[in-house]
Image (cartoon, rainbow, N blue to C red; front, side, top):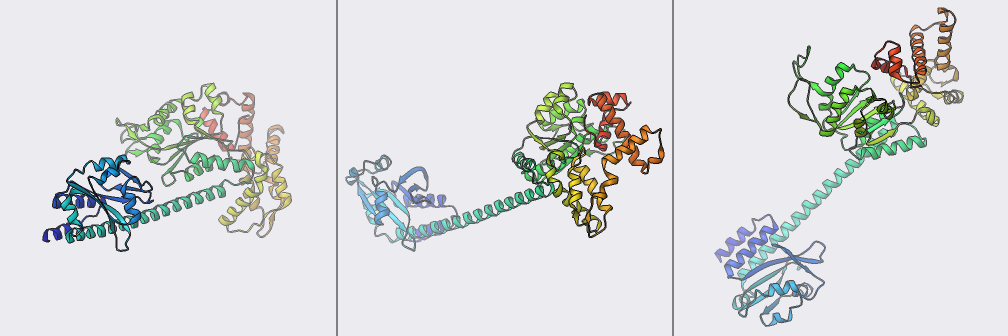
Length: 511
């Protein structure tokens, strides 16, 4: 009796059902000198039985060719000797089990009940007939089995609780992820404004692009909102909690661009007093946005291609490779395909970044969105300047819809903010508020300045006049060379990069 109590004490220390069943069976075999001892339990769906220590055993409970189904249905034990086993030869798996029973042995199949009289498992014992028969009246075996059932039930309940907790935790994680996705989508619709068909299609394409890790190439005219699209792709992606690192390739001198991207070690060049992480390193785990990528120098294009292929890079002055797992988002207003043909952009890099192209529509193709955009810009202006401009009058809106927008949304925003300054609080913006800001007025002033013998009396805004004059010259030269910026820059005595920067600043598109 003392030995059985010791076994019961050891049994209730187990916290794993498979190990519990293994200890239980091992103890019975040793204590009772049995040939075999198994515990068979129902699966979660109740359609089959498994052996706790034998994953290959599967018994269909609807198959009455084996006695386990009868024990489950009748909730009573079955005792079989060698002679009676000849009636249970149809089931292949049970026939293999029965081969362990010789002429001096018996097979006991007994249901194990919990406190609610429910069958939680089936005990399978094979041993000498006198031992098996004696078990039916053995209090030690019954107490040991009751302890096993109690511990088995406890562990199963704990597993179910843990499973429910995990399911709840997973559900919370999914809900949070869904909410973040909804928030990101709402944020995108608040920034990429417009109900036009082309904008709805763009938002759908952004969501699809964000669901992958493909490189994204955003194409569109200057001022159309390419950086907003890039940020939306990042915000909707699985990398949303990691950095979004942006750089304008046309705004940084070629001599500095490589160190900005790759970083450098202390002493790599004159003035490198400390080591500095590059943008590629900063974007690890997140997204690297290269704006105006079409202006990237050819030598740097080759180095970037290697980074995109291997995700390995080497800072300036370093002899060690480093890695960065980033997602590339590139943007350009130039025709990269034409640049490849002209030799200004590497073909292999083009195909590497042209994995998921997104085309941002210009404002002239979605004039229907001007009212929404204008309302948004007016609201921003009011919040920033603590004013209360009520909106656009019908005549002002019609005027805006009749204009051409080479500067796209950026140009519209400039017009709206200018009109807000010209408008009193608590009234609508009228058509007249745009008069001195419209591109037509600027063009007339430039024409007078150029053609009327340098009549400086017509100029009332020096900076605007200078910018307009410079813009007119560059536009004329681009038209002269059919949009070839390299030839236009050479004819003006400018580096191509400087001309590209001026074109971006002045809102000049290729003619």
